[in-house]
Image (cartoon, rainbow, N blue to C red; front, side, top):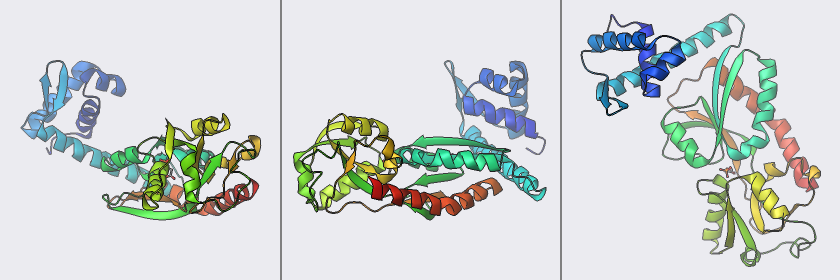
Length: 310
Ligand code: PGA
């Protein structure tokens, strides 16, 4: 392996990622014969086949999989090194890979916008997904930082809480029969058509846990995979639902939704910024995490202002 070059490792990593010589050649802007010859030389240096072709598909062998893990580790370290060198030169430059829970779309993109204005040489990739998929991304070490409200117990993480995430019961408008009542028992929800988030959603998990511990059942009439779709469904009179208070920031623009006063609500939760416990954060990821924590006071103030308005 001592004779393998960084270029050969890059060609191998790209081919393995795409499972295709053609796509690797396209991404690297080299010819397909060059890809084949680089892989051939690398295979010779390793002394074992790295790929096997079955039908039209290209599969990694065990040695190929081990080499891919090693390459990803090497390239991540080199990226971190480049970012650190840029930092030593007084410049924040590099890539930031974030994965955030769907409900964070009410504040993370705006924060990122301001962060990128301050650091124009930082490129950001943001994946917005639900808790179930975020766990899969963590298991594959896909991102630098994760923003979520339910930290999985099975994956060792370093977590830092930075913001409240209260879940509230929302109905269509103030003319709803329950809207004028206070201190409603949880059983009051049982008689209402209920709109539930999709399986894998943290909001759904929190609601199901509360209902199960209090032995209350609701009639789920509709299951939707987006907070915005749920807001529209509530406004259209299809039922009631539980949403994060963050979904209601800026609700003065659509005042038809009303928050009910129901026992056990708001369900008090927190947003966390997390990273894999054994992962060394890049300078860029540390800079964003510090920025997020520094901005949490402003975000909390906006949230409290919403709670008093809706
Ligand atoms: P969700 O998460 O968007 O996956 O429902 C929000 C939350 O956990 O509060």
